[in-house]
Amino acid sequence: MHLKIGVLCVQGAVREHVISLNRCGVEVVSVKREEQFEDLDGLIIPGGESTTIGKLLERFGLGACIIRMISEGKPVYGTCAGMILLAKRVEGRDQHLLEQMDITVARNAFGRQRESFEIPLSIPCLGEEPYCAVFIRAPLITETGENVEPLAYCNGELVAARQGNLLVSAFHPELTDDIRMHRYFVGMVENFKNKYSGC
Image (cartoon, rainbow, N blue to C red; front, top):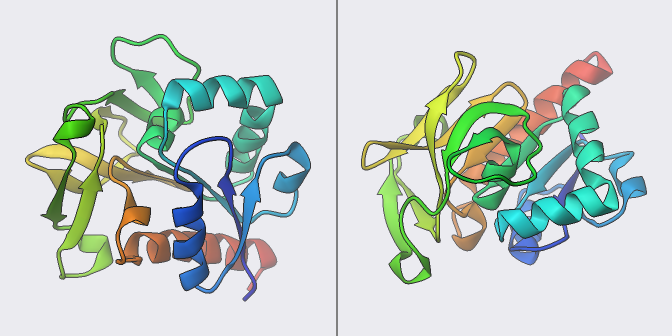
């Protein structure tokens, strides 16, 4: 099955996501313009600076395109800053959000840049082997709605979750050679396309 997945290309770790998705065997598009959303099957919103990305989404009308994708059932994966943007609520901060996932997020919950770290996590949906997660100025999820499925915890704090066609992680899956998070997301996209095509 041919899948076409976009990586939002306004700021952040775009190239690394593209490489990881290429390794999953899908067509990848770096998305900068509204017309590029039309034939996407899924989208990744990468890490970066969430306030800056939010302002650019609003300025160029790309936020509405993402919300439309989500309303159509197409999977969207937000990593780090992308998780913040997809959240309905952010603690102690007034910023532009897409407000699509029923979670509350705390920014920079694990400290600043110099306090970045890697840690093996148990992520059952990826299999038994621990997943080495990279945290850089990472947020965390402090509250979830009833339809949100927790996927991974770090030191007791929720750092990855899913709600229907939405996937989020506080860590950066593109900064490791382990592409299981990307494969999991590609599986979500494939399932959506199978359902949409009536297969």
